[in-house]
Length: 152
Image (cartoon, rainbow, N blue to C red; front, side):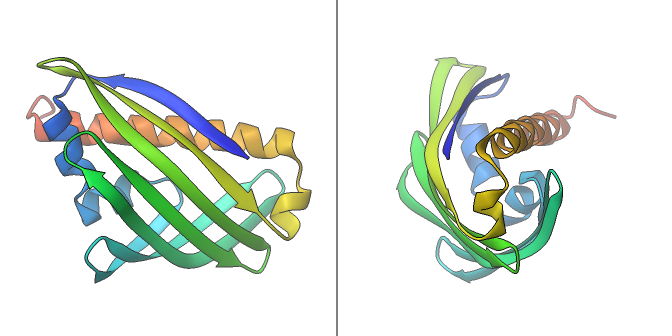
């Protein structure tokens, strides 16, 4: 399954980068993730609860941050296992400054699914991927707005 999307933020690339590299923030903004535990530098154990259409499950696995080029890009390598199937994904995340206060974040990657997840159907999974992307972007927006002191 191909994963792709873009979103423009009212924040500098450095601000967004620091949010994405913070383990607590990353756990809060990543849809479905209930916990990230640091295993080593840029290596985490991830626990997630995900509902995909009629299928839901608890996933456990690893999330690794690779090929970091601060504050421009990195690759998220994800391997998750559950009773309903496994997910392996590599997603490249890029930050493109539009101006001093505006940055476009784009992601592009591929997820390989197995088990019941793979049999759920591309149409359902594509819709779920789009929903999860929107949730991620909105959560990152909220984090950036909160840290800018504009809320409250």
